[in-house]
Length: 337
Image (cartoon, rainbow, N blue to C red):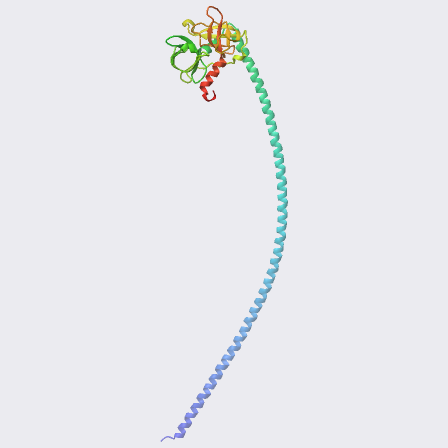
């Protein structure tokens, strides 16, 4: 039988050994953690010193950078001021130059305009002189043509604008005075009819309609197609002089497109109560010649042959072209009449 006291003693020894082991283990653990804590604190201190050094260096760098930035800012401010000064100077110089250019431009423009005006004036003067000389030369040529024995050049143009006017009861002449195809004749040639047959110098016949008649002044206007026959230019009867040479074209006694020469015997001659002051001429105006043109040296119509004194030779009368022109204008411009 075992001794219970010895067993108890053995158990106590194990207990204290275990306690001793635990104490040793705890001391070792404490020492380990203490050592690790010291190492960690040391490393943390080193890291902290490094960080503080880095922060210090960073602060110094920031200060240095800030100083450099301030310096740069000052330089930029100074540069901006210089740029503004240069810009102001350039603006001032540009404005001054622009004003000078504008002033010079105005002066140059005025010079050009003055030169242009002077040139135009000179050109106008030269043109007027040339036109005047040309007109004088042309007038002399026309005078020479009419004063010579050969009137063929003028007559050839005249007869192209003179027509024979025929109705059932009478025969007369007519004058083409407008590009629209208006033909002037005497009212007594057509009578009360509303149409008439018009025959040109080449023998071509046209049917013309009556547009307007004046039984008092003995004027009548017919119309054919536009531009078919050439017109004769109208002169100014107020410029006609006694003794002036004239030509008459008509169809007396059926002799178509006969031409006769004479002079103006009198002007402003009153022979009836119509209010017309006639041009008196010694150019023969016979039956069939009524309505034909009385033409001056320039080839202008100055009258419409209308009457003669029966039983007398060389006493013909023409209605001044101014009456005929007014009568024609009333047709072409009815609102102005």
